[in-house]
Image (cartoon, rainbow, N blue to C red; front, side, top):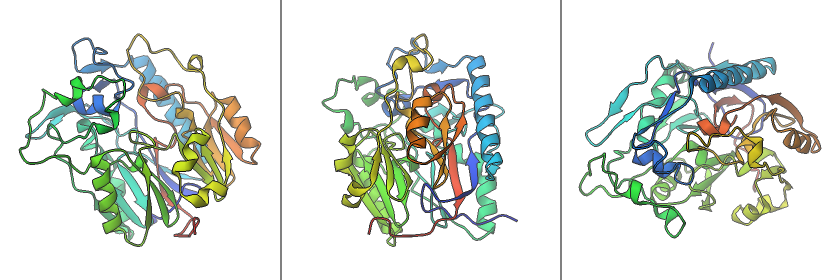
Length: 367
């Protein structure tokens, strides 16, 4: 019998989780929405005139092996693991305003957030991800039948000029490739839309940290506050262009991992008294060399993207021994799982998972 969703935080005992499915992820479609989202990592010439960035099949095979290893480790830890249906053939999808090749449901954290007993589908930044959650809907329907709430943010049209690039203004990036957006149509009178990912949030019981970097995200925060008045949404002012789960990672009440102390001042005052863990720096030579492809989708901080099984246990990339030792010194038990190509596919263990059932409740951790 299915349990209803119940997930208020990032650290209480994990009971059920959806782990993403990488099968068929053999390329990235780098339309303008993709380029803007990964602006600091994908160069306009990376695909040499094509919209497709090919990924060697051998690396996809290795990714599949590593994801299966994650599933096995979570199962061994007593977590029920659910999977999306695999993509058997990646098709072109579209609307009256654009077309794109669909993205497999690998980084399932991005398009959904569980807020207590409610499944909330968010409003994708990337056109190729608009229908990605359809692969998760068999699970969502079972949760609905078990008593869960289920709602969606307004679906964005993602027409030309829907995306706000203002976060990058004044930075050393060439915006011409994304602001021109010649492959799409404009919807007159639309303006910047509500566009928002679940991974822009970190949940701490009643309190939710929300990264807001542009007008799209500001609309998302406004919608969240109106729709969930019982929760407290704390606005973080552009600490990143979008996702924050490789910047601020609550490990348990009183223990917080931050990419650097630079970010502490942006957080709510009660978090300033928590014990802060600063992870060891990762050098570029700690990662596979993808220079021949022309891109890395994730920064060298991606391994901060850990997944807590409970307040004392955390899943960490086995290729990061220094990070494992750092967390063990804080009294945490580390479950090492290999993850080789996290920068190529743009996600760590937190990105690859949607924790649908945890033991926590709507507590006031920041009161």
